Image 1: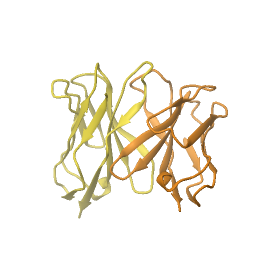
Image 2: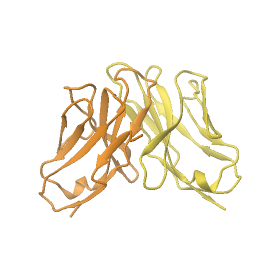
Image 3: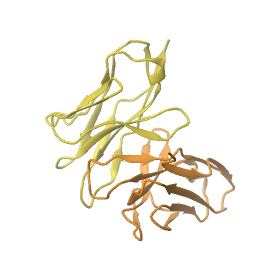
Image 4: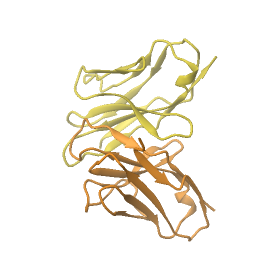
Length: 115
Length: 113
């Protein structure tokens, strides 16, 4: 019963390095999301994908890119990491875009530190 | 714009105490409202939800009522346990094109034995 799986769980990067955070869900959900969680800020949406083949910017997209590789997988890429991107990153999925009452399921998070 | 405001934490209670975590929202129209819980080292999981005015969501002894007149969705539990220690997030969501979940800042609850 995997749900939403994120890798890696922890990562330390040097400023300017690049990396990709991976996310996969096995619930056949159409919509997938990337959030970052910072102290005192709650969760802020970076990018989302309403369905396979589409992606859209959220609140804080600068410095990130995403790829919806197929229905299962949605990756987040940092091309040139900055200390301001130190955060905990969560991937989430939900059954259908456009429906207010559907639950979002979250991965366990990736703790990223940029030094 | 749409937003969610939660009471500041941390909230520290003794076991069996009554819990209230306040949540108010600003929104046009009629969003669905959610409470999510995050246990240490884990992702968020849905605790309860309400999809229209006067609905009451409940789960694991927690309750929250969708109050349109006060734009509130306060979380309550009659008797907390140590195992309830976690961060609680209030959130809202619309249907249609603006279907994103909007979260409050979270409230840390610490329950002492």
